[in-house]
Length: 145
Image 1 (tube, rainbow, N blue to C red):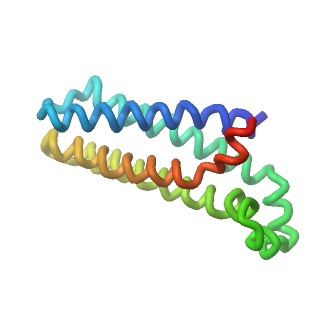
Image 2 (tube, one colour; image 1 turned 90 degrees about the vertical axis):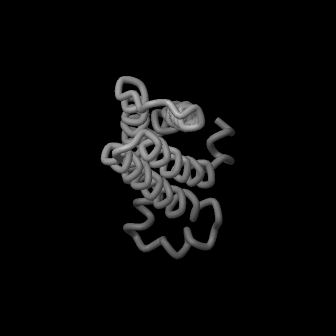
């Protein structure tokens, strides 16, 4: 059930990142004044949705057969196979790094004094996070569902 939620919730995460980044790029290029009711809430909702995804992912990882294998010394076996390495190490680590970048970008946006700097913080850090997410999604298993 948690694995299903993690896989399904990912669609919402991707959608929220796309909407947020496009919204911030358009606002930046149009020199709009930062609107707390719109832009702030959009960035915070994206962070919340991604945080829920990270928590679902951690629950999935800690309840997986991979975690049981790691507890029994199978990490070396997993590292020899690209698919296992992606699911055991690369995907979880990169998603945590992406979450940290998103969190950092949100905090930079909150602390920035000008609208331009607020937009740049989200565009840069949410954009980097989004690229990391897209780069480490296990597409071969995700799209085959």
